[in-house]
Length: 583
Image (cartoon, rainbow, N blue to C red; front, side, top):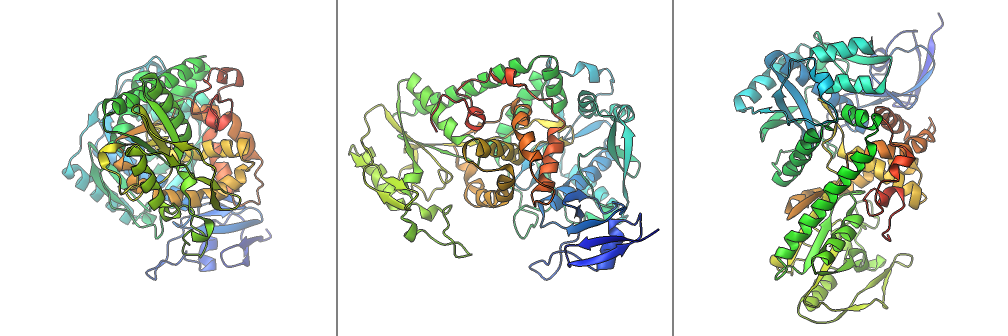
């Protein structure tokens, strides 16, 4: 047979390959090792883009392709690594703790939070565990001895350099395998989406699914750590921040509590994973899901307002922060309504109006204006005006002209009466530098984010980042004239800004508000899928669009008629339209 021409983007050369040879063979021929590290080493190649589609290094070459080898400096490379590491840990837990089930609950800044939970050996649980509700599964608390034992076994398997093999299994075979393993969430999901075949990855005889390409073998997984965290542990790997080193684990009690509360609530409702949500929607319970989720939000807003009211003799300023597409704006407006209900008069002020004139804005390391820096705000003016307001004086609110890049006169004059309370939202709202001259007891700080603990199945959690990306994609297309392609290409820069300006201060909050809703991803699917399908195969965003489309393919969509039950004050209206608020 004739050899096949393959173009390698990494070195800009063409290679003629034997039909059926794999990407690992090509990699060896190129001599490419990976992106250089700051310390002089290199990041090892983990996977590849084949015609802008993510593939494993075991991918067979049968036709002409354009190939780009990727490593930990690529988000797809890090995801491939983390998926494979989760399979390794799953195998170890299966061998060491056969009576327990490994569950990855949610993402932490430093890795993935996991627990060992009581495993049911009753196959009928697959039928019982549905939207009718259930009890919260019991957690097996692990100690440092467990951590040492698990980590030692993981290292042993890494040193053995065992292959990870992909098998295309019939769905009923996969369902039987997962039921046997006690993975009823995974089995239920496969039942709900009705696929004929599913990819099952095998490591040393243990089979599982992970919804994306995996590493070639365990020998690639030398960069990891396992750290005790609350009742479970934090599985650590490459971080998303250059130089992508493993981060120090810091226990964040407030974030943990909000995730745990949401996880318990989802389990009690019987909608703790995509399979059970799919069952609920398919059975005609989408409207009930919407109503219950929105009622929970309303209850949370009221509870936060009550806490502020209890401190009304001191608190004069409510600060709201959160990452992109967390629903900060709607949160501020709905909280304002609840404050009015209990007798307070909220005065909403935008931090954007305190920007410095553009010519005075600090520059970043590239020499561009750094609008996300806290020093892009006129901190002296902000603090002075707050002091005046709290002292009973009247002030002229600034107005910022974003077209000219200048502050202008003409803002309204305000003062604070006995029942007035200021509400401000922005990315720097929890940074102590923002209002350094204001006494702590005069403020109440809220952190809002879509902290979903809804999972795909037992060992595949839904990334809160993906949740927010889908929100932003839909909103930007609806209201900002920005395509899904543009949103995806800008997303990494957005996340870097969040890591610098928002996440380090989230634990400063007096309370956290979880803006996620159980029904939102099946609802967002209706809007996001057509946008993602418009992205051309030649685009740098194509691989990400395929990943998100695959993720959405596991969801049963909430129809337009069912969406009519979403209230006009819902956070979702900020993204899909139809809100009764003005933005």
